[in-house]
Amino acid sequence: MSSAAKFAMQASRYTFLALAVTSVVWGRDSAASVGRSLLSHVVSGNETATGMLVTYWGQNSAAPKYQEPSLDQVCAQYNITAIAFLAEFGQSMPLLPNIAGHNISEVGPAITACQSYGAKILLSMGGQGGDSCGYGFSSGEDAAETALNVWELFLGGYPTKSTATRPFGNATLDGVDLDIECAANGTDPMYYTTFVQQLRSLMQNGSSSSAATESLDTEYVAVETTLGTANYLITAAPQCVFPDAYLGPQLAGLALTDAAMQFDYLWPQFYNNHICQYNLADKGAGFQQSFQNWSSWANATAPALEVLVGLPASPSAASTGYIADSDEVKQINMIRRSNATNFDGVMLWSAAWEFENEQMNQSYIPSVLKSLTDRSGADAQQVARSATFVVMALALLCCLL
Image (cartoon, rainbow, N blue to C red; front, side):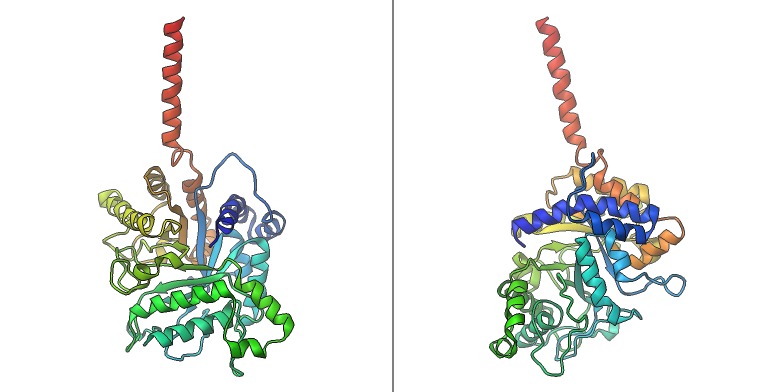
């Protein structure tokens, strides 16, 4: 992503902080209304945000007790929302997102509405597969073909097969997220490198194939060229264990080993992983060390790559790894006080679980916002240095007098 686009994403954070608070206090409809009027510019204020809010939408995880709201009701609270999941891909499988009972015909207009607020909407590929994993690539050719199909069906391309249709209609997503947690029989994780490289090439060049281009009318070719030069995102949600078994890095041939420069954001999942998630017994030492492992690697390998902390939005959202509000603020503040200059916010799993929180008047978002704006975090050292300087100056002045 270009530096200008990164600046735009950073600028929008201030707005999303206001929107998230508005949504929690006034309700989702009010937040969406505010979003339509405010997301075109930076909201001024005394607090400085040090990161983004990211979530996943589409799995309706808190049902049947609480039905997940529609995408356009959710997205105003977050900088980035990933639609979960494209749970089957590769090996010539049709690409149809599994969004757990949501009406797929309503998703396209919702994507457009969210983008009009300034939100970024991604397609998350993968998800928890277990023994019935339905995704992966059997060869480089398989990975490249899937990248082309994703480009044509969800991003800036146009279907080249007469039987193919865009699941979200004319809506164009802002990028792709990889949440790779298993591998189907006959597949190899090393081919995600090819997938990522091919997809980034399509994102930058804005073309599908010569046959596809010849079949398009003049009006669509002009649109396609514009979309191809847009600032698409590629993100990933590895497990917090470093390195991740399916994406790397430091494992030969994997995507974060050989194609790290193609990624814009990582949000490792600091839950359901006892080794690296927050643990009260060690006061978060393992959690902090794991984040530093990811952050240090990113700084050394891909300086433009930014790293977020992936957390469960409620105790029900994961088997383990939930951090209570006050501890979450402390842990994020510790990261902000560290040398992790590429820290860029918090990812919450998921929108459905946060909605459940809100129905019980226990929203998790306020504590996350506090951890991203609290003066006791990143600014603490600067305040201490300033105070020391003032004391020294006053002492010197007294001596002179």
